[in-house]
Structures are given as structure tokens and as C-alpha cells.
Amino acid sequence: MKRVYFLFLFWALVSLSGCEKDIPADCAEGGAFVKRVDNAIGTVYYDSIQTKYVIRVPNSMDSHDVGYLCALDTKYQQNGLQVKFSGRYYEYYKTLPMYLVGDRNYSLSIETISLH
Image (tube, rainbow, N blue to C red; front, top):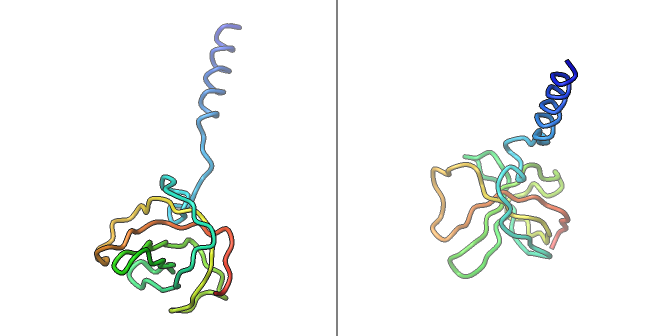
């Protein structure tokens, strides 16, 4: 009987240790980490197809990092607003129906943000 009890206890511990923190599917942390940015300067836009705000950071004349945000403070929810931010880019989990060639789409988790 003790053996069955210990086997059950072992199984319960193993099962519970595999539980992960629930992360909403729309949040950046749902995808694999890609890179971190510090003091990046970008422009806020609203993507009406994805119904999300994005921050678009130019890399060159025809290349941008586009970070889809889980939540953006209402203070920054303005198309064309220039911001300075630090945060983490993660793989974006959705297939986008349309996007600009040269854009690299990510989920973005903001750590700090301010007007630029």
C-alpha cells in the first residue's frame, strides 16, 4: 500500500511540475524570444486588420521591425506618434494576410516607453 501511495505522490509531483504559467495567446511572451532593444525610436500605428497597435522601427530605407503590442497605454494610442522605447521582440504567432515586403513582424513586450 505504501508503494502505491509513493507512486501516486511521485506521479502527482511530476504532473504538477510541468504546469506552465497561463499566457494569453495575444501576448508577446507566447512566442519564442528573438531579441531585445534599448532606446529604439519608432512610430506608432494601428493595424485595423489585426486590431492591434504596432510600433514600426526603420532599419534601412526598405526594412522595418514591426512590433505588435498586447496592450499600449492610451497615452500612446495615436497613429504617427514618435516614441522611444525599450523592450523584447518575440516571434509573432499569427500569419499575416498582407504585409509590406521588408517588414519583419514580431510580438513586442514594452518595458519602457516615452514620447520622442
